[in-house]
Length: 247
Image (tube, rainbow, N blue to C red):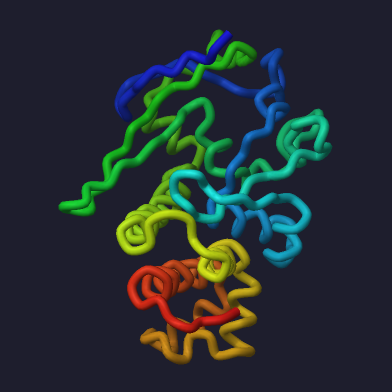
């Protein structure tokens, strides 16, 4: 059976609950097709206390988005022959507090469109009802807004939306697939933050980038601030003033 996808607004209600007593508990984690945002990776690597490079090597794979032409990072299954999320356990998600954004919103699907004229973002929500999911039976009735707040997804949504101007700028300035060098720069600045930090410290990567030195100092100590710097750096270096930068 195909899943049922129904549009819904922020103020409309739906009935859903997910917990160990639901008979299908963990079933949605056993058919892995999970893409990760830069903020997802930031939170997960901190969760494990690892460098971004170690996390990316152990838990992710990289390919190029067919439409965006940008590097896409996805979770690798625990076993190549069995598409189970590497973080699922019989008791639930082992990284639950730092689970990826799309897991946090499930069974909601969220899309965002951006006006080229004004830059304003418009959200679009849908409820995804998959055949295996029994969470819609005897669940809690709530609005989309209430569910987002209960799942603590507001901040994640806002941070993930910061990618949209970058994608829009890329499509205008460098349509198509990025070359190897540009793809590496994009991957490093947004996904491999610890490598990005080391290049700033050891190779003066931001020396010619107009940015407040105090902000750089903060970014070198704080991953979220560093991700913000990485996003601005990518917009200028790759999509406005593409020059001879190396990592």
